[in-house]
Image (tube, rainbow, N blue to C red):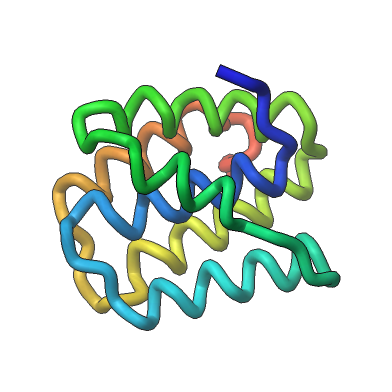
Length: 120
């Protein structure tokens, strides 16, 4: 798989977080839009990324999430990781319920970026 830049990796992680519970809520979409606006203040084409994510079987979500998490980590600063963790938490809380699946992915992110989450 091709290495993603940090913004696309973050987008992929948020999209997976929004889909793991099989219930995409409009509030989750707003979190993604806010993330993209904060990360990329200019217009760009997401068609390719949507195509990749749409074709991704659910059983591959966790592996893809981990790959995106690692790509994001390699290209980001500690502050960018803290900021992204805030978006991830907002994502799972957006629909006012945190499912077991969402919690699994969020824990994976917090565990992998443990040094950034101290005092979070």
